[in-house]
Length: 88
Image (cartoon, rainbow, N blue to C red; front, side, top):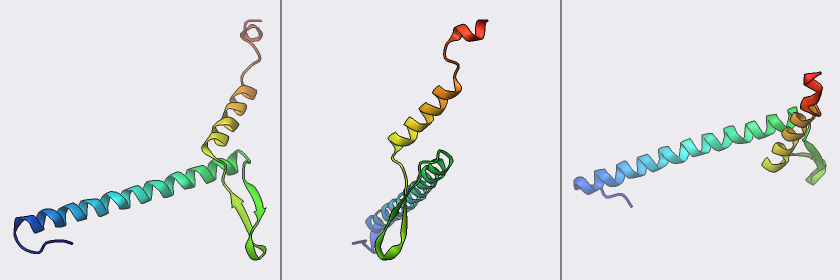
């Protein structure tokens, strides 16, 4: 509960405002991170379609580990087999 009188009330109200602001920033970052994961899944073709309730199709986003592994495979496929090939 926020005190309404004296200096303590101002401090409690400021703390509550700061906490609300921090939570709002956290929520924005979570949404942005979720959007990034979703875009990476689409670009890496990792989206999985699964049947959901009432005939709705559910799109599942891959885990961070799956995304990183897909990127590693792309890098490995794009990298020459050995440095000997480049020297010739």
